Length: 218
Image 1: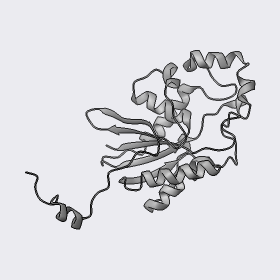
Image 2: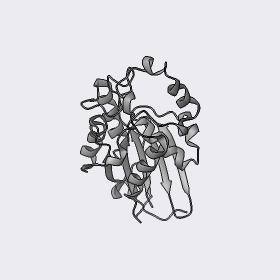
Image 3: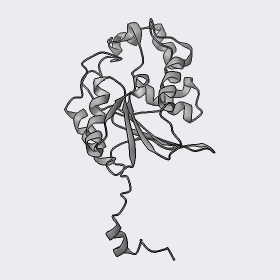
Image 4: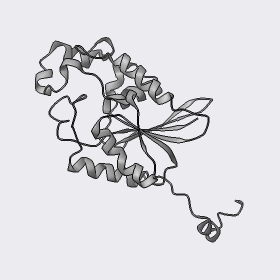
């Protein structure tokens, strides 16, 4: 079974001011583009077999540098799209913090539904369904580019955390969280890993021979 790389998109100019949600035409800013390139450099040696992305521009743009490095297409995965925040989408955080429902969101997020939007239970279920639909029997590494709440809800599932506790997980822009799934169990290898992670590079055969690694270990 596969190893899953759950990756949040890079920075944009809306994310710190408003609840972006599914707003169209939200693109990476300069810093976000740099993060996407750093991410591609970090993962260039990872044996990734497929790349899937939320359909929103900021997620696709984060995936593209890695896809170019690896010669893979960015495949759109609708189930990875950002939460449908309904009437909250586009509102400033200052406005939202005045709402009674916002306070309930901080205390018991699993119990609420965003006005004319989704519940977090529904979001977790459809994101997991999307991700697990791409499982196969091979030990492949698969990258999924999505959004902070999507990554947090998926990681909460694999960590056996309650949805009410999912906000304890911090997921930075362009961070990688890694889950390895086997027949016996599920192992969380990393949470919120930023671009300082380096993937071990497989040595070419000539380097292995020079170092003696082509021989059986003593």
